[in-house]
Length: 135
Image (cartoon, rainbow, N blue to C red; front, top):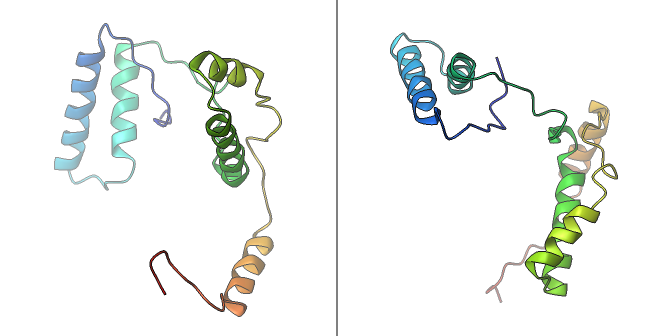
């Protein structure tokens, strides 16, 4: 089974492949298959049937295990873009100059770290929370 998080489908044959994927998904649902990842499975089968699939791994990193750092890097990039009011050409140049190797795509942290993080949040809740419009 392929990870359906990244899918590139050629225009020629796309309609047939997607129709097949939907039919497989519907058939699995009607057969009572546990509805966990059936869409991903159906798409994998349909695309493998219609095309020569290739992994996106050399081009796209699955950053889920380091989502926080990537979100920070992306937010910083977008903030700089807004503050500098970059043109499309400048955005393209900035993307070309971005060091994608500066933030790891995989970072395994120990579970103890997360337990302590959540424990500290419970032990030291915010003293005051104020929202826009509150007085």
